[in-house]
Length: 98
Image 1: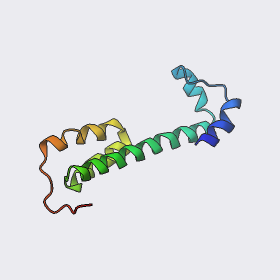
Image 2: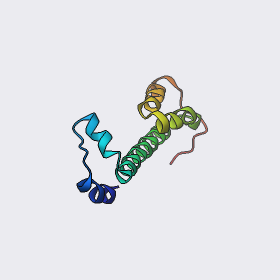
Image 3: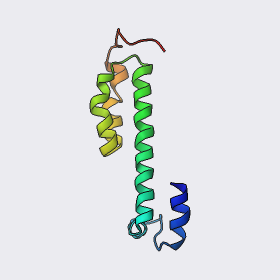
């Protein structure tokens, strides 16, 4: 990701301070790839954090079934799906200790 940005950004006409500037950045396929990798990395981080939270609270992993695809496709929507889970769901009695 960082290498893609370092190589592609200097020759690009876009900027990060306006929507139009970002659109111009993403006209360069290398910058578009860097942006996509950035979003995928964030989605992976958020998904991992959600999975750890489910385990930490002793909740069933079935809760991840709707949340992980939502995180991948719509980012914060997956976080919103599971945010009330630790307060409203009972711990899973068969969850093994770590």
